[in-house]
Every structure is written in C-alpha cells, then in structure tokens.
Length: 588
Ligand code: AMP
Image 1 (cartoon, rainbow, N blue to C red):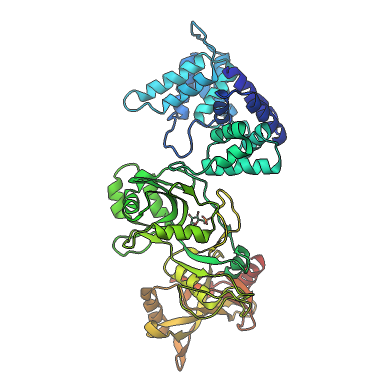
Image 2: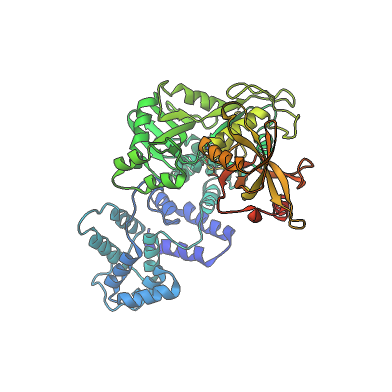
C-alpha cells in the first residue's frame, strides 16, 4: 500500500468533524485492506507504533524533527521554527518546508506504508553515540521522498500526534462495522476483546477471521496487560454500600491504599509489573518483584494490588508523591528502593494457571489469590479487608475481621453502615490510608470500566478550621488524654462560637499529647471527666459530610470528623463561620 493512500485516509478523517463519518471512512479502509495491510492500518490510523506497555519510544523530539526537516529541505531551521510557531504544528511546518524546498534528492522513491512504518520503528533501536544523528538521517530520508502532505503526516506520526480526531471508540466501531454486523452487541464484543488484549491489531484480525467467536477466543495473555477495572466514587459510606451490591450479594470492604496500582504478571521467575496506565515499571520496583517471586507460589498468574511506600525508620506510610519518585527513577534504583521501601497489598487475581478469571465472581478470584500466597511474608500482603456477606432481608450481618458488634441494616441513622463498618473506615483513615474500597463479591471483573462493582469512599470535603469548646478525657489506652473534643464555628451575626460536632479520631499519640497540654492550660470548669475550655485552640478538621442536627448550637453536625492538624497560626477570630458551614452543607 502506498503511503499516499494512507495520507488520503488521514486527510478525509481530518476534513470531517462527524464521528459517524470518521467511522465510515475507517470502516471502508479496514474492509478494503488485505491481511498484511490490516494490522498496519489499524496501528497507523491512530499513529501508534508501539503498544503502550512496551518501554520503546521513537526517541525523536521536536527539535530533532526540526533538524531533520531542515536537512531534507534545505530550508533553515529558523524558518521552520517560524512556521511551527505560526501554525502550532511541526507537521504543517514540514509540509511548508517541502513545498519551498531548495534541494531535492536525485531519485525520488515512492513511500509505502510498510516502508514508513519499518523505518520509524527502527528508530527506537538506536542507542548510544551517534544515535541522534542516525535518527535525524532516517526522518530526513523519509521526508526527502515525501510530498508536502506525506511529510505532514510522517512528522505527526514521529511526534505521536496525528491530529485527525480518532480515538479508541472510532476504531472499535469501525472494526464492528467492517467485520461484524455493527450492532450494539458487536461493538461490545470488540470492546471486550480490546480490554483483554489492549491491541486493536489482534482484535481486527480476530474479528475478520473468526467473527464474534474469534473475538470471544481472545483472552488474557501473560505479559500483555489488561485494562484495569475502575472504581466509582461514593459520596458516603452508607450510600456506597447501598450502591455497590444488592442485599442478596456480599460486599468486601478493603483499605484504599495510596500508592501505585500494579498489575503483576508472573511466569515462573519472570515477573513484570504494569501500572494502571499499562506502563511497565518492573525495573523500578526490584524489591516488589523479589517479594512476588518469593511469596507467590503460582507458576503462572496475573495479580492486582497496590504498591505502597513507607519510611524505613518510622515505618509510616509515605504519600504517593514521594513514591512516584521511584517510578520516574531510571538510575540508582537500589538506593531509591532502600530510601522508600514498599509493600505490595494484593487485592485481585485475574488469571491463574492458564485460565482467565475475569468472568468469575470476586469471591472466586479472591479465593484464588489466597491460594497462591505463601504464609510467611512481609512485603506482600492481602489488602486489609472485612467481609459483609449477603444480607438476610435488610440485615447484612458481618462475618469476619473487625469487632463483632452490630449488624448492617435499616437501623441507626447511617442506614447501611453499622458501627463495625464505620470503625473499619476510621481505622483505615487513622492508619494513614485514603479511605475504603467497597467491592461486590458476586461481581465479575470488568476491564477498563467504571462500573459500580467497586466503589471508593474517602473524606473529600474541604477542611474546616474550628475551635475546641469543650473536651472529655478519652477511655482505655488514651485515658490520660483529652481526646474527645467539641468543635465550634463562629456565628457572624452574634460573634458567638456555636458547636458543630464532636471529634475523636485522626490524631497520633504525639499530637494528642500536645493537644492535651494546650487545652489543660485553658480549662475554665471541670465536671467529672469533662472540661470546659477557653475557645483558643484551632484545629483543621476533615469530615465526610455535613448534616442538619438539633444536637449542636449551629444546627449542623459534621459526620466522621477527623483531626488533620493544630492550626497554631490561627486564633479563635479566624475560625470558619456558620455561613461557610451552611454553604458547604448546601453544596454537598
Ligand atoms: P482513584 O484513583 O481515586 O480513582 O481510586 C482508584 C484507585 O485506588 C485504584 O486505581 C487503585 O490504584 C487504588 N486502590 C487502593 N487500594 C485499593 C484496593 N484495595 N482495591 C482497589 N484499588 C485500590
């Protein structure tokens, strides 16, 4: 196939903004392609030369491309840069450069799709001294043989931006139209095949050669990552529990870890780790890889989990931003691994011993996961979890983990969330995790979809600065601390402090000690284990929701308030106003 024919397709795609027309153009092209052309076409219409999970890159920056254009045309780099600036597209600058070129090659060779593809792919293999010049030569070579339109698209392909408005959805629909009947079921079958393969070339070939059955045969393959299932956001814990599963279905509560999602592929000692965006980060996490080799007993499996970093001295969790340094790091990896060691918290098993488990229930998949973990391990753990089995009527009794009080049912103000579930949520937050994931134990795995089988709950409201008005000594281990605090905001009309809730979680012992010391100096009255204090100590508070409540002077109550920090920089005159609380209540 001549490259000019592909360029013609690009131009037609570019000329229309209608999604339907774009699909029709691609459908026609896919239908007309022979078996050799089809995979190339599928790849090149999106301008992608490599699968997202390979680390290969063409390694040609804009400035190298600019030099290649200059070399091929004899037009000065300054002039090329000017056009680039004017049009915002180096492809346009290349087209203009070819039109105005001052030099020509002696023999014009006609560009073919295969020729352009192979030449560009080879760029990624150049390494070391002189590799930049070689890249420039290859791109310049292609441009010398190109007419202005071809040059435009060679350059856009090199830079990875075709600008013809083709997304995954257009390619999907065109495959369904070209090789199946284009129905909604056909589109779903193509989409599903893509989610497990992440490769439209394979999908197009399977659809053409085997139709719907051919697509159904495509399945997970080791070392080719699958798109991950995505979570929906729940506004509240109770709402999430209600939405994630019907009463007759089981629910799994899991800590939501703040780290890097990892899809782990293992065959014997070969292990590769892919991120949620399917990037291969195996090299960056040798410690996680070693833990997997050592503690995952299965020969062949695909597992999912979250890689979480911690401080080696304090063992405190490190935030994602710190861990992400490890992803970016290309050298001194061992040193980085000892600075920020990691634990892998596993939460799914997608494939085991030659069999994909995507269509199994989460309960089955987790059973498979438990079955492949060796008993003794530290750097590899099953994600902290708690199971809520199907409810009998409205009563969802809990079965394991956590304390055993209460049942999940229609009783209590929190609807579906009982005390033990709430305590589990608070324990997740108290130990520095982001919140909870709620998972439907009877649901299958839906790659790439944000279905409601997995919901995330985390405190998201804007924090409030509130002042401590009264306090109570804690119970049990913390009974020497004033750990139960009433919080107030300011009523701007009267200037008074009015209470909006009571706080009991979120602080470390150290923070509690400091708070107690500050509050003791402000006590105005003592009664049993309760004290009144001068409203002086301002705290930054997070919470899940604001409710109306007759219990407090403000008429509002924070649900699940959590201590963030003492605002030593603020005084009682700086605390948030009742108006702000009311506005946040109305906005939520
Ligand atoms: P978000 O990034 O806020 O949309 O939340 C979803 C992400 O939470 C997932 O992509 C995972 O990286 C992460 N995550 C943390 N803990 C878990 C868990 N127990 N199960 C599933 N995903 C988790």
